[in-house]
Amino acid sequence: MTNNSMTNNDAFVSLADVSKHFGSVVAVDHLSFTINSGEFFSLLGPSGCGKTTVLRMLGGFESPTTGEIYIDGAPMSEVPPHHRPTNMVFQSYAIFPHLNVRANIAYGLRYDKIEKAEVERRVEEALEMVKLPGFGKRRSNELSGGQRQRVALARALIKRPKVLLLDEPLGALDKKLREEMQLELRALQESVGITFIFVTHDQEEALTLSSRIAVMARGKALQVASPKDLYNHPVSVEVADFIGQMNFVEAQVMDVRNGEAVLDTAGLGKITAPVNSDFVHKGAAIIVAIRPEKMLLSAERGSDGRATVQGTIKTSAYLGDRNYFYVSVDGCEKPLAVATPEAQASGEKPLDRESTVWLSWADNALILLPHD
Image: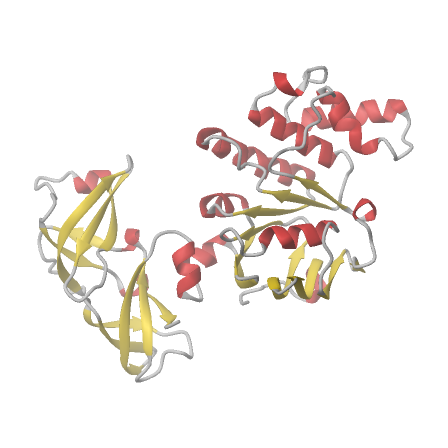
């Protein structure tokens, strides 16, 4: 786990060497990171990576096998779920069908000995917060998916938790509504100012919502960083492959001098790239990674002195604002993906399948990664 920019003094939520075993299965493996107060923090990874288990341990629904979880400086191992300063929103929303919206939202306050007038005031405040004023008397079967999600959020927030835990709460929504709710959820988090810890397997969703992201696999945090740092400075092939689309080319380091590596690559020939990591040394086998949008494609060989390589278009995909071309290059195991603006792809000479093209890139477009 790397790139955790928070110090212990900043920590509002802290996982200290936390592991969770289910029999012989290690679901979470010596996990340590911190989350700041008021942060929108996401746990991102494929199914089975341990992200939901982490969320359940934070909420008190599972106990760590080893390690400790701290919230606002207090250890949580002996604190039951209903006494923790957390609340949870599930993917299924868990809206009670026999209760109307108002009763669903007020449900969490039933044991708090709050006067009826105060409950009514807080319910109205919660309805306004999630943009559902006037919906109090509706039943769950009279609500859309997005409205049910808002009710679940309101029911969690009315308890005024210090930390809101969200287990893929947008997973049941269609794509358009999901994108709309992402923006609303981020705006809601900024308005209430509490810490949100969000679980998702959707990389775009994590990049859109989060101030920082922990990329998880096999119960470990591979990297903890801001969305921009994860995208532009991944620390491993696994992280780079999970965040966005990436081209990978094997390379041998021929020499390192004046802050630059001379590389002999499989397909791109001999190229140079800036060095900022100790694993790049003479004789090392490494991986060169390039984002599709950082590659330039042309029907003619450029004359600007940039490194270029010839290839053949094997297929393409039109995505509205841009085209993706998949270019076969001698020496590369897989075709290289190149993303071009739609206008660039519609020049005088069409770029059809089997067209010969030239690829180029700037040196600072190259990301050097250790060979896994």
